[in-house]
Image (cartoon, rainbow, N blue to C red; front, side):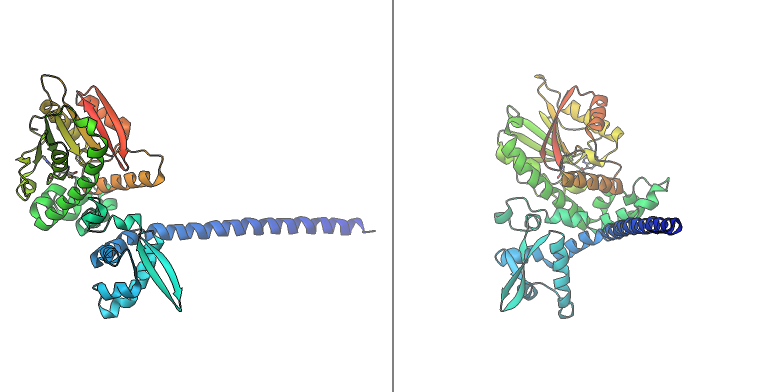
Amino acid sequence: MASPLLELHNTQNISVRAMVQNQAVTSTKDRAELLQAHAELWCHIFGYLKSMALRSAIELGIPNAIHHNGGSASLLELLTTLPLTTNKQSCLPRLMRFLASSGVFAEDILIEGTTTKVYRLTPVSRLLVDDIDMNDNTCQLNFALLAMSQFQVMASLCLGKWLKNNDEKTPFAMAHGMDLWGATSHDAEYNMLFNEAMASDSRFVADIVVRECAELFLGVRSLVDVGGGNGAIAMAIAKAFPHIKCSVLDLPHVIYGTPTDGKVEFVVGDMMYLVPSADIALLKFVLHDWNDEDCVRILTRCKEAIHNEEGSGKVIIIDTVIGSPSQQILEAQLSMDLCMMALTTGKEREEEEWRKIFVEAGFSRYKIMPILGVKSLIELYP
Ligand SMILES: C[S@@+](CC[C@H](N)C(=O)[O-])C[C@H]1O[C@@H](n2cnc3c(N)ncnc32)[C@H](O)[C@@H]1O
């Protein structure tokens, strides 16, 4: 029989062992969490490399090269067509492995004697193929190049400094010494990229709007696309509904550089002062560039423009309404909000923020249609 002293000793031993075991369990769990957090932090820190790898892929013409190779291409096939210098060829497998791991391309491994890696387009990279027959107006190549351009990346780099600074209106102005519209009017190349990028987004949206929202245009005789850039959406609407007289209002450096198709009228002007009369005033991707006060001003001009005897005029807004059950759409919306913070005095808005602006501009009702993924279509009535 064990002595009471030994029993006490054993009991202590057991509880110490249990404590050590418990600590081991806790510290293994803590360590796993710590290592997971560390890896996650790396993903955030290096997140910008996802953009830069994508930009390199576009600059090298990889989506088009895969498309022209029949939809998939081995590394060797890519190397024979892409403009990589000989001493950089060993970098291509690493770039492709990274882009495949982030879902831009898909990677297949073929084993026929030797192992060959073959890359296919994914739904994401199909949006970057510059071939209208394949992607029917959905190409987002220029939009991607604009969003990852030096002008915009440099503005984002100033975010932190700008948040601590009282003087500059935007990080963009801090980086470039002028606002976004100043830069587009001063730099012809940036102006062209900006307008083409907007046009690619507009063609993408127009396709859905004219197909799925034809009822919006019933009985409509005229439409003015306010801040309409090079008129991509107005042209698509004029083509789909030839009875509607479409016009585009924008700043001089945009209008004067735009080739006209004769079907849409281009008007130089400032939407802060006057919007030409029409049954519909369309504002696509415009209000998110401006603060609430300026939005009220623009909407007030639009309300004056759509005033007609029948009282049938309306404003159509195509912009983001923050909030979505899809985590990816929400992330895209919040990313665009930070992009607006970096570039403009505007922002992406939640429904309540939109409502406040509409009421202040004197509108009585609105209807939000979340039919455009990241963006929504809003009908707005006086
Ligand atoms: C983000 S872009 C959108 C272009 C077009 N609506 C689209 O979605 O493709 C904003 C447009 O507003 C125009 N803009 C900026 N300030 C303006 C003003 N005061 N009057 C008229 N247009 C203006 C810009 O030149 C630019 O074309």
